[in-house]
Amino acid sequence: MTEDLDKKLCEKYPKIFKMRNASMQETCMCWGFEHGNGWYDIIDSACKNIQNHVDWKRKQSSYDVMTQEEFDEEHQPVAVQVKEKFGGLRLYVDNCDDYVRGVISMAETMSYRTCEECGSHGTKRSGAWVRTLCDGCNKK
Ligand SMILES: [Zn+2]
Image 1 (cartoon, protein in one colour):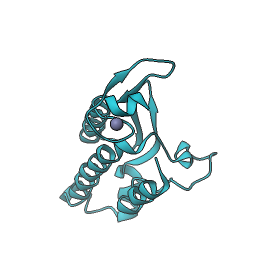
Image 2: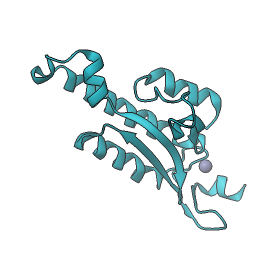
Image 3: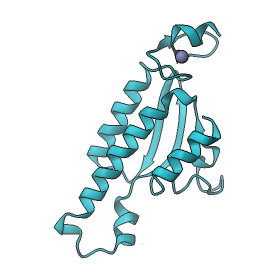
């Protein structure tokens, strides 16, 4: 993904992408978003749902005893790698609960129907490299 969109996601979801600029000994997130710009909206929507869910969870009374730092340590989802594999988006995230796993599963499924380059409706293309593309991007 291009630098401007990469930056935009990190600024919108600083807690999810807090490892973006960590060293490669610590995380694969240092490589950035290893896929085309067409999946930006999918990741943006997934992160929006995930962060809203966690912020809501934080407000539940059972977490009152924890400081924000303690809560984040245990419950804040943190992306460890985001890439393309076999034509689909892979979103690897630590600290997932069932809800977050569901959101990620939906995002990965949508990527198989979305052109990785431009975000139009796409289908899986097999060639030397399996990718999900629209007709236009596939011709290029
Ligand atoms: Zn396309």
